[in-house]
Image 1 (cartoon, rainbow, N blue to C red):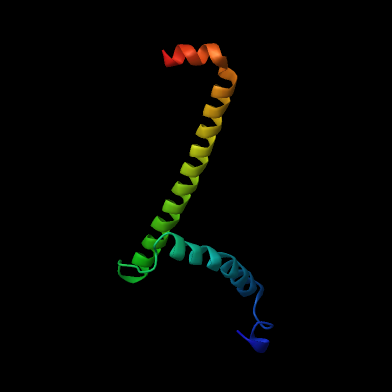
Image 2 (tube, rainbow, N blue to C red):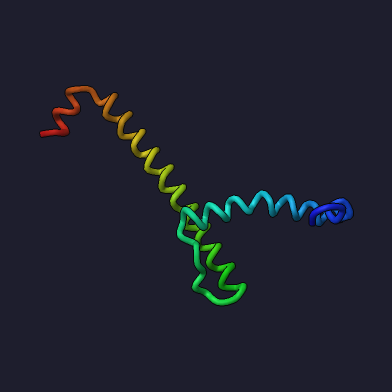
Length: 92
C-alpha cells in the first residue's frame, strides 16, 4: 500500500481504507479499555462475536454514565428547589 499502489486504487478501495483508518482507533480503545486483549472464541465468527459484545458493553457503560449524570442532576435540582420546609418534612 506504500508508494504508487495507493494512487492506482479504485474509489471503493480508497473509501474502504478511509473507513478502516477511522475504525482502527476505536478497536484499539476497546482492546485496552474493555479487556479485549485475547479472544477465547474460535475462528472469524468468534472474533466477530467478541468485538460485538465488547462494543455492546462499551455502549452500555456509556448509557449508564449518562443515566447516572442525569439522575444526579435531577436530584440536585430537586434538593435545591425543595426549600427548608420540604426538607424537614422529608427528614421526619
